[in-house]
Length: 172
Image (cartoon, rainbow, N blue to C red; front, side, top):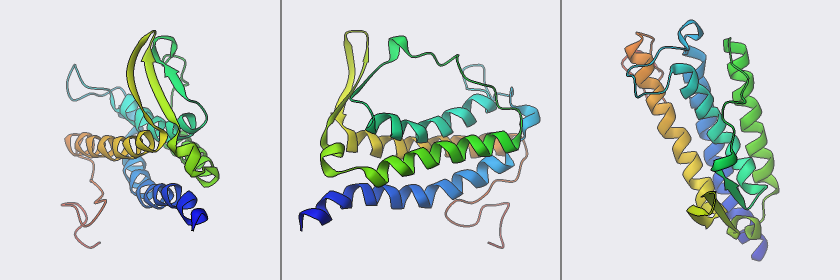
């Protein structure tokens, strides 16, 4: 019985991740890389930033399960290599998804129950179980994919329907 309990949380996350990654890939495939600097509003991320962030969120599952804390005051988000093609974008997404999958496949119940903390210097921003963080990261990936579909619509790019037909895909 205990073996089932150990595998159950990580397996549930793996199942959901494997259902959501293909939907995310479909949206990424349509992103017009010639417009990566486009943003719908001055306070919004650019298309390129949103794409990278969406893929990064998936990769943070690995980072979460391989650490117990993150100090954002020393996090260097500027040290990223720009993505300039659809092939690079999809490869980056697949790399981040594969890393998340591998770490979840190896995760035990104890791994998921450990507390993970995000801080800025001495200030604690979040402190919760790794399982809660993984749940949040999957939700964030879905949220940002939703933002991406709005960007696509505003750029007049056909929007894929993640869970059923979209206005652009009636014959699903």
